[in-house]
Image (cartoon, rainbow, N blue to C red; front, side, top):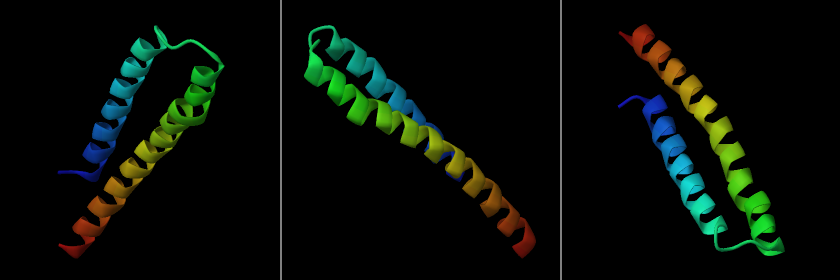
Length: 70
């Protein structure tokens, strides 16, 4: 499997988390839920977005190394 595939799996899991979070927000609407979303859900999404780019770069680097070693 390619390294970038792992990044796509992580991104898909994060999208699923967002869907579940939005369902949760239907019944949990207060200041603490707003804080939780900002501190954890939004921050996690930002980190995953940056990580996905890193997975893509690592995949390209691994391919270059593989090609040069052949």
